[in-house]
Length: 427
Image 1 (cartoon, rainbow, N blue to C red):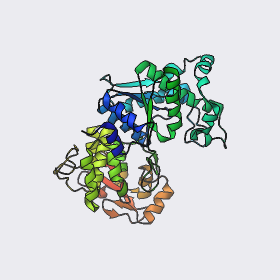
Image 2: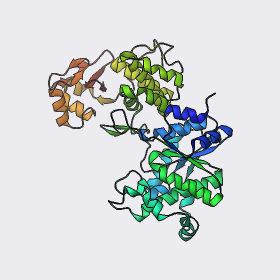
Image 3: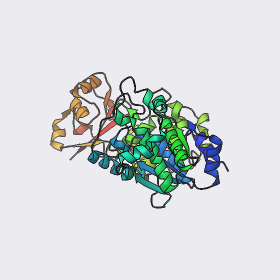
Image 4: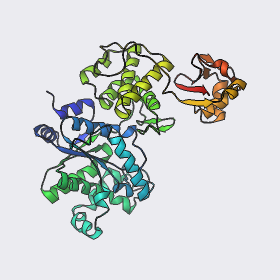
């Protein structure tokens, strides 16, 4: 049977590691406690956080202990890593509110009822530190010269590095030491931009406890086109359903570039690698079916089976869909041949029958329904033939959309380009 480290490496999770041989042995010989920290700088995690979350989930599912650490304390400082200027300072109330939201999202990937997964907040210990004692006991282990050589600090020196941010490495290292002392944690996981901070924690544990701890970083993923992962024209793709609906989340994944499908299936689903490798032999329509599998599995993991099935059925109703044969990614729970399609997960706005009998200008509906960000954009789109009612191009931006445009179910279906739909429901 393949060892865990090999699996993580094959799936694309390993970027840097303190010692590959020792880490492989550590993950093989017994149960190891690992942790990842996330600062609650927003009310939701986003797709850019998924690689570390999925990496931790793989480790947890293999039988190890997993700690998801919410940075309620470090979030009050702000991590300078990968930033060209200081983060906006949030209030304690904002940090606490964001931390509570993150706890709910983590629970979709880790089962905190088993005892092998822990959800912790570093505010519980960092906010209680005595500054003088911290400097004396922890700060004495840190060389300013080494800290300034770290990439996360070096890149900020030209624009100015705030003294508050300069303390961040010490606090993150102390987190690792605290979790080692209280939970026996021996491995920290994180994004590749955290490498310097993580090594500082390994060194601190060695100096304070005489123990060899380890760290492993995940790649900071970009798409095959070189774009930052998780960004769309609307901004970040959030894991919170109230910020990015399950249908929009599904559409983000189904629109994956052909060159990214195999890699994303390995990183963002739990499907077996031997099934994922069949991507190499797929072309055109079959590759699009594989994107459907990716979208369904990613949505199922983040939002649950019911939301994933609703998004799949609505997408099938909107764009059409070939039946998925039973031997195509058999480990996936996606609906198969003969499954019904519906439009319940598509964006819907309600208009009175009186309004629709009179007719509403198309540009107004495209704007108020969110298909376009402004009336000006709506006018340009419709004037250029980029808007549809049903399957018919809308003739002009001021064409009246009315009840006669409804389908047999009483819904009016508007479309922007090939991929964005809106349902108008009469009441």
